[in-house]
Length: 238
Ligand code: SF4
Image 1 (cartoon, rainbow, N blue to C red):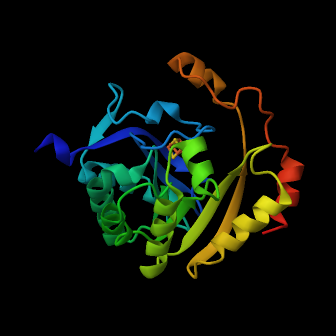
Image 2 (image 1 turned 135 degrees about the horizontal axis):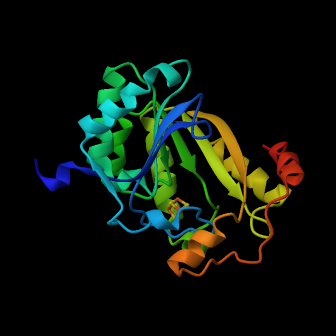
């Protein structure tokens, strides 16, 4: 078997409860093209890591299916990252196996990928959890090194392919925590006819230690954690 047929996996959480509906078998892929200022997983950024788990899609499917009794009641499998679309062929193949076994598949993505890669995976995806991080090219470029236009094209593709969509947004104090910003986010999200839900996730700085260990400066050092009551109040703007 060629090395390229293996997925590079950062870690696996066999029963996650926050990445899609129900209990889920969550696989975090290694590698991400973005550098979000609030990223909790800077250890997933590099495409290669000596600590990567290398599995074929079949091997991952076999592992996931062992936990099926725990997640079959409204749950399923999720692939997250890093950016899973960097390993589109692997994820598509894995999802194909899971769908064949009657398991619900969710893709947790920033949408920062070619439409061709995205389409390959979306064909076997039952739900997309898409991060809508900011609302302008300037913010995308400055705060996460991405392209807003690319993310919007990805969201349009999910609509064209009629894949149910949840949009997720990390609310960062001093950046996106105003009613006006959340209203704009809501307007943007509601343009997509496949939208089912918007989730606001409060900014947390628990990853600080990880950054220090990796020797990477944390750009939001000193920014307070998002107040949960305020986040709840903003949720009403959606
Ligand atoms: S897309 Fe996700 S994994 Fe990549 S830098 Fe942003 S938050 Fe981190």
